Image (cartoon, rainbow, N blue to C red; front, side):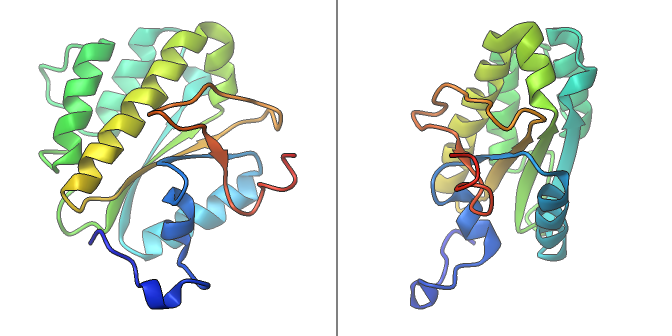
Length: 174
C-alpha cells in the first residue's frame, strides 16, 4: 500500500500529509495528536505509544521500545540492536502485520528525554527515519509522531531530513 492517488492531489489523506516531508512529525498540542492517532487507528494503522518522560536512561528507552514494538527476547538494548530490530519491524517480521495499513510510533514528551540525553534521542529518531525509508521500499508505511511540551523544540536533521511540524501546527510554530 505504498501509493496514494495522484488524482486527489489537493485533497490528500492525513497519512499522506504526515509523511510527505519525512517519516517523523512533531506535535505540541495533545488534542491534535489525539485526533491524528484516532484517524490513523480508524484507518487500520497500528499505533504504538511510548512516554519519553519516563525514560531516565538509555536502558529505559530500550525496554519501553522493545515492549511497544514486540522486539524479540534477544534484543541487545543498544543503538545498533535498535537499528537491527527496527529493520526487522520495517519488513513486518514483528511489531505489526500485513493486515495493518502501517505502523505509527508515538513518542510522547520527547523534550524530557532530550534534556537528559539529547544524543540518544537524536539517534533514536535518526534510526527510525532510516528504517521507515527502508520500509517504504517494500511498500510498508512507518511513521513516528513526536509530541513535545516545548513548542520551540528544534531537532537536528534525521534520516537526512529536517524534522517538520505536522501540517496543522506548522504555521503556528513559526
